[in-house]
Image (cartoon, rainbow, N blue to C red):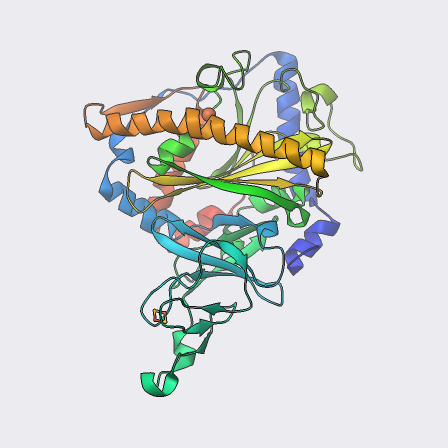
Amino acid sequence: MSYVDGVTAAASEPVGADARKTLEQHAAALLRHTAEGTFPLASEVMAFGADHYTSPERFDAEKRRIFQRVPLVLAASCELPGAGAYKTLEVAGIPVLLVRDRHGKAHALLNACTHRGAAVASGCGSAGRFTCPYHGWTFAQDGALLGVASPADFGTVDKAMLAMKRFPVTERGGLIWAILDPASTLDPAAMLGGIDDLIAGFNLADWTMIESRTLHGPNWKLAFDAHLEFYHLPVLHRDTFGPERSNRAFYFAQGPHQRVIAPQGRPGTTVPDDLYALARLPAPGEPLDPLLMGEWILFPGTSINTFYIGGIRCVLVSIVVPGAEVGTSTTTQTFLAETPPDEESRAAMAKLCAFLAHVVGDEDLPTSAFQQKVMATGMIGEVRFGRNEGGLQHFHHWLDRVIAADSTELANLLAAPCRP
Ligand code: FES
Ligand SMILES: [Fe+2]
């Protein structure tokens, strides 16, 4: 099943020639480094102001200049599997309603009634229309105002002017992206810089949603920093991932986006995306999995990790967004499977989801919350990102770049694919 024209095209030819070339360049670099025993490092240690995590002014700039200007991944396409399917969420205090209309088009709306601002939907589900629970105004799946309750008593309004606020939205690479500014004239589809093409090989639009959960944490960057290096894996996660995990990572940039890849196969497992075990590039017609290995980082706060359960390829899509205040964030972990699982595989997936929630919720986020507390004291002026933490350096550089760019610069910056 595909939802939009772009996805239909991608489904029949999952990876275009340019994207495949880039993926093969990444893979060739990994194989070369492995053969030569080399490991690229950033040129220097980067010192970074701790106030980036605590300053309300910085938070306001990130909210306005990043989260309200950059296309954000808000859901996987398969989270809205049919007409009327909807999901609500909140990003930096902005309530959002995602809904698929009867034509298959996804809409991103401000989840606020145009009478007096109540939420018209909560949680997730399926609805032919939305009725505001406060006074009963009704809205269509595309946000149009359908009806005013007791219209004769209420008085005359121009219904055409009172549609819910609509955010620019696009659906590419099996993900729903939106710019959270109803006044934005930027085109989100033109600002993905090719990262959607690189992940097209997953064909995520056709996948099945298994489960989703939301974890709460400190400043969104502290929560997301933990996705951007593997330095901490064998230490913080020694009891879960194990102390034998490598603490190194290769980084490949695509504009502000990245891939983070461990320098060896996962210990004790043979998985179809293990390029190191294959030790060559996949030939045309062979499965693409080895070209897609690693953690995909979609700027600003989304990561995609691959797993194989009972022979089924799965991904965990983690979406980290700011809360309403500088020191709060949410991490939504959504687990997808390439094909609908049988009972046994579904049980194994549920177990893995619980494990991943434990790793992030009981190991990463409490650590980040403590960092937040310490930084809020003002007694630590700086933190440091090592030469082995190039992904963090890249991410924080790009945050500054995006904040500083005017609208035209921003559109150009994000549109331009950045080859490795
Ligand atoms: S606020 Fe929605 S009907 Fe009044
Ligand atoms: Fe972690």
